[in-house]
Image (cartoon, rainbow over all chains, first blue to last red; front, top):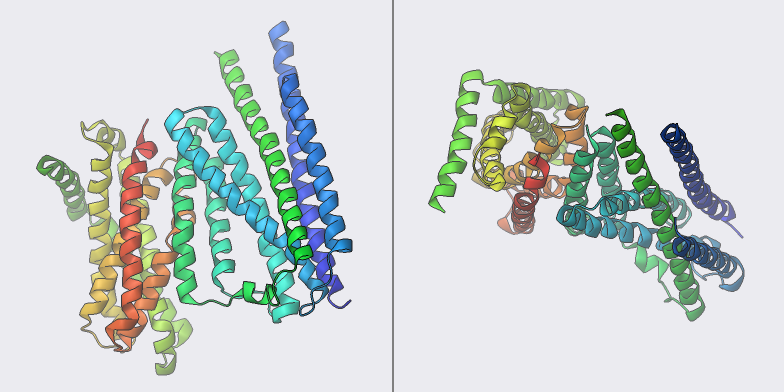
Amino acid sequence: MENLGYLLAAYTVIWAVVFGYILYVQRKQRRLQRQIDMLKESADK
Amino acid sequence: MNGNHTLRNSILWGLGFALMVAALCMVFVYVPTEKHTGIIQRIFYFHVPVAWVSFLAFFITFLSSILYLWKREIKWDAIACASVEVGVIFTTLVLITGPIWAKPVWGIWWTWDARLTTSLVLWLIYIAYLLVRSFATEPARAARYSAVIGIVGFIDVPIVFITVNLWRTQHPTAIIFEGGLTPPMLMTLLVCIAAFTVLYILLVIQSAGLKTMEADIKRLRSMKAE
Amino acid sequence: MNKTFTKIFAIFWKDMLTELRTKEIIVSVLVFALLVLVIFGFTFGAGLEVTEMVAPGILWVALTFGGVIGLNRIFAVEKENSRLEGLMLCPVDRAVIYWGKLAGSFTFMLAVAFVITPIFLALFNLPIFLPRLALIIILATLGFAAVGTLFSALAVNTRARDIMLPVLFLPVVVPVIVSAVKATGPVLAGGPWGDMLTWLQILIAFDIIYLVVATLVFEFVVEE
């Protein structure tokens, strides 16, 4: 089972980066949604 | 978003999730350990699909860039840019997992081999793509400029590969494929490639959707300001 | 055909005249490239055993970085004096503008290279008269100019344009740099033609591919 550390590191990095990107996209989506809501509100006035 | 899109997205997310779970199970439970390099060879099942996806991503960017310059529809620009974003992230992963695999197997982190160097140059080109996009002075310009870089950058790939290959090469494939790829290994690799391709499609759809949304908001804002 | 050539020449000649009066680009690039050579001389100590290994690299780093500085100016001078709009209003095909500008940047870079290279050869005690090196320089400079003129036009309209050009230009011309360095090695060592022919072929292929691609996409960069 030598090199298990390397293997673990590789898979951790892959998942960390992929989830990091998904999180980034989600946050951006929320931010844009808020902007849309604001635009809607101001349009209704 | 209409119902059709939501349904398609749910199916894709489901498929992606199932494939990813299957891929992980196959990598860690099903596939036998490779004789020569040992347990570390299991990186290969994620490293290769990630590399494949990054090339696919830049190819999609190349095509959508041409389509954008031709049709001038914002959708193609959104896809091209989203694809570069995902491609750069995946190339980063290739560049990180590569050395992690190389260190225990070759005893070195990095070698200026054709594949490694080409990936590095690719990464630099598309980082420049993203930089130009964020530094361009207006959205229409950003779209045109990045389309040009998307085309020029992709045409550069084979030239870089040929040059660096002549320059110096140390074949990593020869070491990975020593003793050939047994059927269970091939199966695992194929499932992993499928899983990552679906993940790529999902991320691009999501990210491209956001880019179109962003452009719409900007347009609405400027209309409101007038 | 003949008319196209006349138009290209007109744009080229305009750049030459401006440069002859101001000497802005050539002088600054020359001084910069010379400085790179001198700094390398200090850092490597210019010992004889080191020279053979690093000399080709030193020459091409100096020419590449000098080239970036020069290419940056090619469109920046137009932009600063608001002449870019005038140039774009010319009733000619955009590809003609590209080739005119390309001819200008190629000439400037070549002029600098032909001054810098003998100085380099003398500083590092290498044979001065090397016709084969001239061939390499012409082909590599053409490659630099082909890609650089396109990206220079692109970078000039971005914020932080001085940094955008090298960031874009350098990774794309990696094949040119590698081939030029590899071809220069045997020439400096007085080796046979065989070693450098492969690299010359790559340089020629790169030049042709990028001249064609850049001609095709240039119009999208400058359309306003």
